[in-house]
Amino acid sequence: MNENAAVSHFNPGKGAGSSVGVAILGYGTVGSQVLRLMVENADEFAHRAGGPLEVKGVAVSNKEKHRGSLADELGLLTDDARGLIEREDIDLVVEVIGGIDYPRELVLKALRAGKSVVTANKALVAAHSAELSEAADAAGVDLYFEAAVAAAIPVVGPLRRSLAGDRILSVSGIVNGTTNFILDAMDTDGVSYDEILAESIRLGYAEADPTADVEGYDAASKAAILASLAFHTRVTADDVFREGISKITADDISAAKAAGYTIKLLAICERLIDAEGKESVSARVHPTLVPHDHPLASVTKSFNAIFVEAEAAGRLMFYGNGAGGNPTASAVLGDIVGAARNKVFGGRAPGESTYANLPIADFGDVPTRYHIDMDVVDRTGVLAELTKIFAEHQISLRTVRQEEKGEHARLILVTHAAREADLARTVEALAATDAVLAVNSVLRLAGE
Ligand code: NDP
Ligand code: HSE
Image (tube, rainbow, N blue to C red; front, side, top):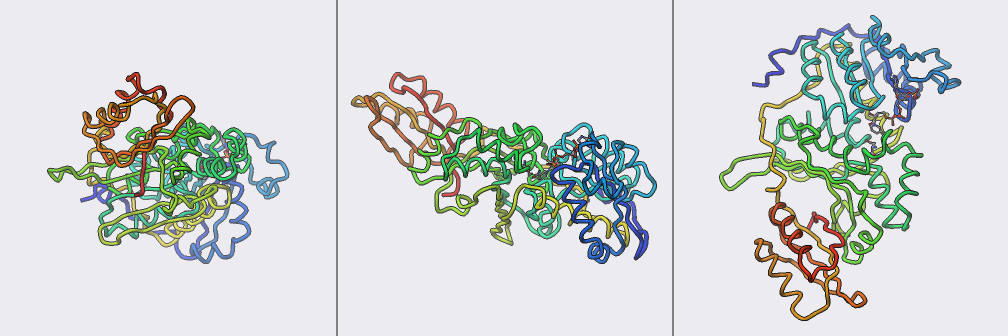
């Protein structure tokens, strides 16, 4: 039995037509659009929730910055988030500040005070899901976080509800808008990495610290959330293997292009089953080569796309806006309406489900295919010498291509699937030979 059910309180609801008091914590890219849409669509949301949604306050760190804004005009601004949460007339708290420690304190405070919480904060959910879910269960309130993964794309709800009757085998795809925006611009327009990163910050796609995007931390948090939901197992960001895009060069992109691939930062969450039938969960984030004709290759700009493979449903694809104020506000508002409806009519959203408690697979055991680009000396027998190293590590080669490169040769090899640990050792052994002058890039492949 799900232990959550045992501690959940019955929430009878405030009654049809009752108003729901809302506190918005954060008034940046996302929070400002949430308030605007709540004000513009107040009548519609009242119908959908069963009672009017009344925003009682908007917490920021610096009120002066927001003089003349809608929140200021409505007299809603405060720099006392803790005090706002404590108010008796607040039923629902929307956390769109970002970070981990301070929002954790605020969200726990809200849940423990019996307020439902809607958050867009993947870093918080991925790090503290257990503690937050327990607090929500103990108080009998909701914790919603649709916007935490892939902004506008409804994927958390489908995994929590629509696919609750299926057995999910994998969830994978592009879950970070900033890095997709950067890789796409480098690929199609040849724009420099620094220039396009600055543009993604200006457009409000990147996190407050864009290192979270480019080094894969943001995608790893999202992968942890997706894997937890898909496999009914608690997976945190620390359980996710992570490699970002900051080392991807214009040369990598053009070499990939020439070979028929596009480089994407993928999150891959899989149910692995070993020879004895023992199951485990693998979650990883890394730059990946996908063939030009694969659907993920045509996901451009800050769009995201997620494939879910389930036993009965088969293959499902979720595609849409993965970052930005309005797309994220759409997901936050969907959660606000859902949480408000439960406050009005009673009942709760599905809580955390971790009954399967599968072990996390060792990354070294995960099957991977590599694309290896090396400069080698141009002499008789080099190819035989190097392919022997692959054979010694039980790695089978799929394609081998050799090109002239000045006085040297350039060797591009694609392997068949093998254990990650064996592939890593093979690359180490190759780099240690006199025949290999430079290992230009080692990228993983998917989608063939
Ligand atoms: P912003 O940096 O644009 O906004 C953050 C807001 O939080 C600001 O209004 C800031 O106040 C406020 N804030 C910061 N510290 C405090 C504090 N101590 N007390 C009260 N308010 C504070 O962030 P975003 O809107 O881009 O992101 C918010 C959350 O949404 C993050 O968790 C992010 O990961 C998530 N998210 C963002 C998406 C996006 O595309 N931007 C997409 C999906 C999720 P002030 O304005 O005064 O500085
Ligand atoms: N910084 C995130 C991204 C925002 O670029 O995907 C959406 O979660």
